[in-house]
Length: 298
Image (cartoon, rainbow, N blue to C red; front, side, top):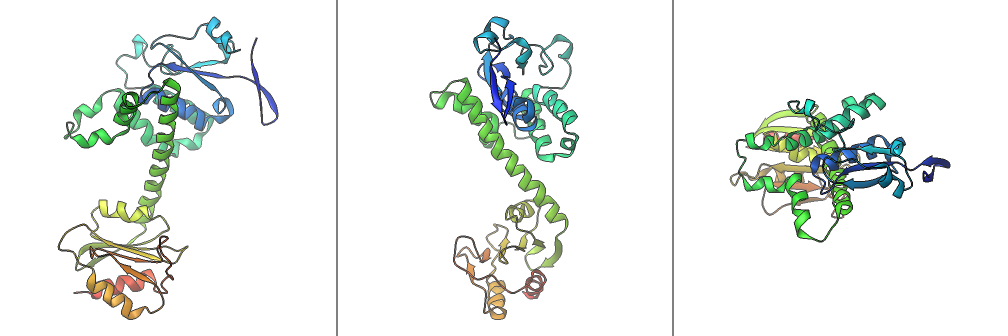
């Protein structure tokens, strides 16, 4: 007998998402995509596990009050969302890419979802062991990547397949948010005001996205000035190079601004106004004015 749940006031059959035990990046990512981006069908689906390569039987489904029509196999079972069939052996695909193709059909706007695309690319590359081709493949820093965090979670604490899946979901939710930050930051940087200062290639940004400062530095800008249009504050950072000293810029700013509260970091490479961590008044100086002050520094 099929189980039912009341969802948004409507009685619906219980859906089962079935993947393999000891879920890896691809299994976790593909189930996450279905739940997050096809919520009408899978937001409330129950997740169950079978041995790798196996399918849930009708008898097993019945134990959960479901029939096989209520079951969707992911990364196992040789169905629509499994890539382990013999005919797929030489194809560059994975469960995550198959599921992504599915959700794009349901919601065509996902074709332009850059953060989701990056997650699918990562899952695909990981599933095909493409980190082997990285120039620094043996570097310890790669142990901070998602695949090794998930692997470490398997051995660092008592857990089961479901807790492994839920841990992966939390990681992917956070990564998706960070990728959205990066995507917005890239657009802010494209609209930035580039200029030359004594510290080298510099840029001014009009954005409330504080992550844009770091991403701009990673793109090679040695001085970044950010004006937050919402809070009115400013964040000025120089690259972490020992010789860079923003003392002259700080002194010129406080000479021209006797209203805003400014903090000059003792490392001499960071000047902050109206920080969310301190009681400071926002500066009346505009982004363009501070850029001109920076240009005057010699």
